[in-house]
Image: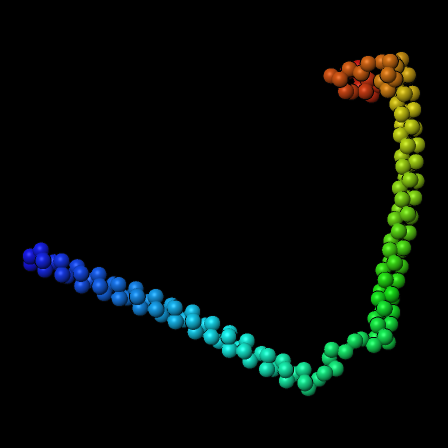
Length: 153
């Protein structure tokens, strides 16, 4: 095979590829056009159906009678009243819990004062000042209570 025959073979192969690509492009375009036709037909048929529906039942566009509005407002008022009652119950429960917490805080403060007094008494028995007094510096390296430990550390 000489060079001119090789060129002819290459051209034939490239022409086939171009034809396949063109066919794929045309098929894709036809599918896209076909897809839009179905939607367009459906849209064109919709106004006819709407016109037939509006002629058969013209009472759909009438205003709501005042009795229906009053009933709807009564139902809404009942729902709002139920929510308000639930909210008042919750607020009462929170107030009760707040009172219980206040009582516990008072008891805790009393117990803390008694504990502080007991610890101070123990320190005084040992003959040392209680560290809660601001005049006596607390040694941070020794965190042990000296009236409890035997070796004084």
